[in-house]
Length: 373
Figure 1 (cartoon, rainbow, N blue to C red):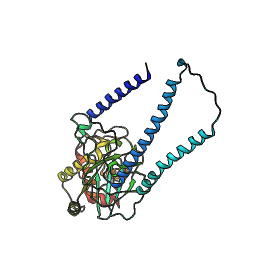
Figure 2 (cartoon, rainbow, N blue to C red):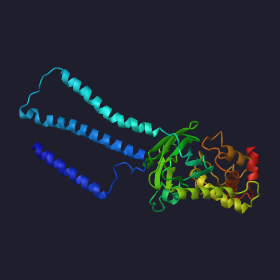
Figure 3 (tube, helix red, strand yellow):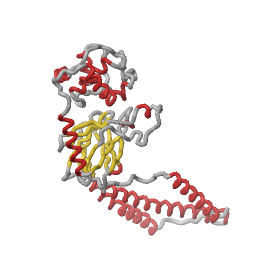
């Protein structure tokens, strides 16, 4: 086969492949940037891709040309030569210049990524197994953000939704045009807070606080995920950031504060039915990933709720292990720092009187307060 014919066939195959990719509407590039910093990263990515593409085509093109045109079968003989000072200088200086061209914009972008000074607002993001907790330090707002994809979709018994595994019950809400500083840490193991469209990717390390920032240019919903392998439910702790107008953000803050002020009274004695109703919500949000929707757990790591020794035993022991975790089984985390007194009382009551259990007693918020003290 003549070399020109080989090139024409290669071009035809490449054209057909490109047409197929276009027809399938596959996205091979980065997400559409929504911040100036994300745009800089996108432009840097494109620049580097063009540079390495030119290098790839030049090196391999010359190599294949030399192989085809100087092969032994057409009468060429191997050349014998010693080192060339000119060539050695060229293959040292040219790569150095290429690296300088690449390093200048990369360093500029990296420095901009670390400039977290003078923020308009600060949010603390804490990674848990397996959800995110958020604190708006300037507003006094605190909540948890948990995967909202139904379990039947995850288990394959229902059709998957549009935002499968990328939807949460409580998204992070920020105003457009404001510089948002994000303090990132973790409660248990390594996590990573990653939202590509906002150019934020920061490791969450227990015992340390790292920071990042973003300033969204357009309202919208932007999705990310934990980018550090953190255990069994690693793929089930997405991040959703909702960027709204300044007026919408003020209304959201007001609504959150009103909801907090109207929260349950921890000193009140609640009925068994009230505690079970709220406890089921807490269980479905926080406990179901380990102990399963039916309460059967995954022994021996995650013991069953149904007929369990703890959940059907004395209340004091049940309160102790849920409040402070277990030293014998480190997978049982301490829920005391994560849940309110009412939430703890409700979920304990639910566990003792649902999922096949029927103790008939209730745990009141006052008992949780006493156990904390």
